Image (cartoon, rainbow, N blue to C red; front, side, top):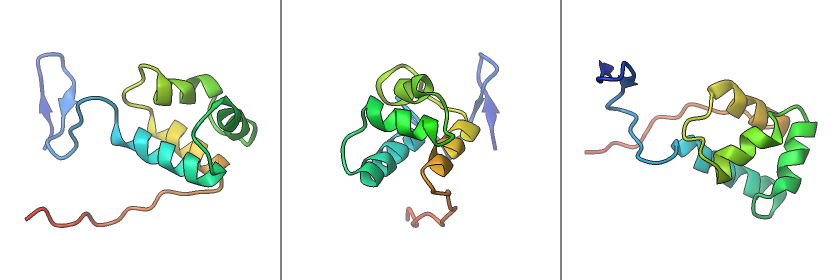
Length: 94
């Protein structure tokens, strides 16, 4: 269940991260595997041209201050490369 902190934002005990959303790192890994090299403006431009979000948005995910990208932009970026996300059961923590 979500709790509210003093700022009015919901905090979820099941989804906690200190710096950037783990989805950013997962997407960076996907981009690097897809293009076969580290993320650069060249790859970001290609994703944008293929229907993904702006290069500026993605640049902020990887190299800037964006900590929590919107789900639709992550989806658009992945789909522009020909991928879709799949829900999988997490490994047991006990």
